[in-house]
Image (cartoon, rainbow, N blue to C red; front, top):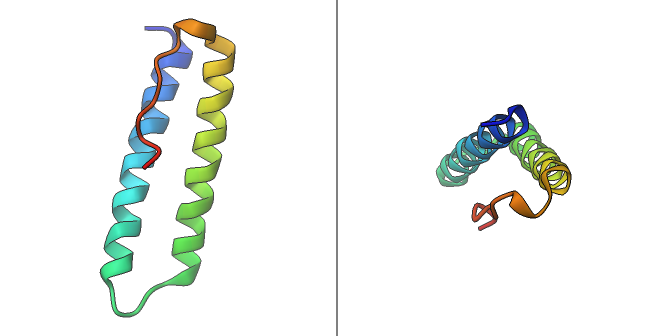
Amino acid sequence: MQLLEVQKVRLEQEIVQAKEKLRQLSLDSCQDLSTIRQLQEQLERNWQLIGMIDEHLGPSAKVTNLRK
């Protein structure tokens, strides 16, 4: 696996973790808006990086199904 593919997998794992944290925070009665904002920014940043990696890798890059 190429370095960019490894980085993409790591970013995808971080996205899953951030989404889980956001889900847990949404269930909390006392929501920490700063943490929520930070996780949302991390998600957006990771999606941008994955897009750049996919663009660099070209058509051989697999499609990510995490955007739900």
